[in-house]
Image 1 (cartoon, rainbow, N blue to C red):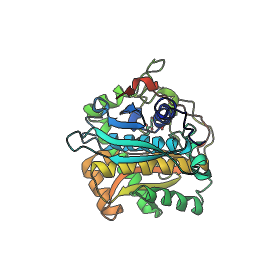
Image 2 (image 1 turned 30 degrees about the vertical axis):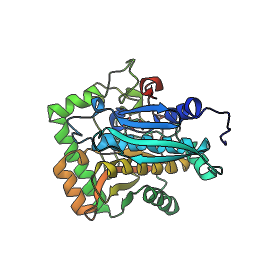
Image 3 (image 1 turned 60 degrees about the vertical axis):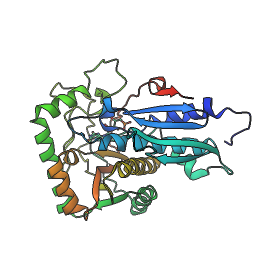
Image 4 (image 1 turned 180 degrees about the horizontal axis):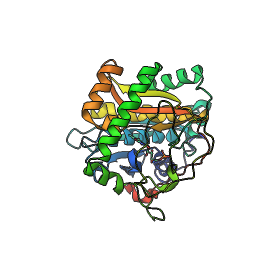
Length: 334
Ligand SMILES: Cc1cc2nc3c(=O)[nH]c(=O)nc-3n(C[C@H](O)[C@H](O)[C@H](O)COP(=O)(O)O)c2cc1C
């Protein structure tokens, strides 16, 4: 798809890019973003009313989520024939203005690699269970590592059984701490609405299994159902596996690094989806500052851990997700 002179960049291309952007993952499906569009420009802003004040007071995960949306936006513009020229955090006096994007006509087609990645934007889903026994091929893992590096991140795989065991145990410790701290529990409840809700955000009952199958080592899931028995009937296959355990890390721990981590995350996830792989996220330990510092010094060579993921081919149940309509997040600007 190449741009034609007669086409108005503002109305169709830019709107479609925003429609694609919102299919990014976001912590607890908070969708903490807003887009301003005017001519060939798109601004991306964080929506601090949607930040998790308890689990994410610095907005680190909010910016990772917005970075993932920014990656989709860039990819969408490219396959529509436009080069996204991005300025990250363009105004130090407006920290919630995360990026200014200018769409300029591309001289040549975006190419098949971008088209294949683009095709995954709406197919990609978070997974919250075990994975099939098939290992993730070494070639695929190295493609995912490359994808992370292209966006300024790095994927560190936990191969050693003791390292995997330690990360699983730290996840369990963080989950226990969060369950017994009422402020965390209240915050989860705000973002995990009861079934039959009309909301188009949050982690809803179609998005997680009723019971999480046990894997070895076991990475506990978050308590979205809060003991109410909500969730999708789990798959009956008991031969499920943990999958490949990876940490996404960055050299710095600044807002720009968080945005890059989000872009790296989304590039990795789309690449993974091309191979029918999905990710299960376990960010509990990274939300508890003491545990995050421990993960950093012990397992990341002093780089900053931004995400902890398990990757594999999902087993069984089809999980669903929701998004707010684009008009709720898009404002026309002049
Ligand atoms: C920064 C970040 C942290 C996340 N942490 C978790 C987590 O700890 N547990 C979990 O089940 N999902 C986690 N997720 C996945 C979101 O819940 C998911 O993206 C959202 O519900 C939308 O669903 P989708 O990814 O299937 O589109 C995280 C996503 C992001 C971007």
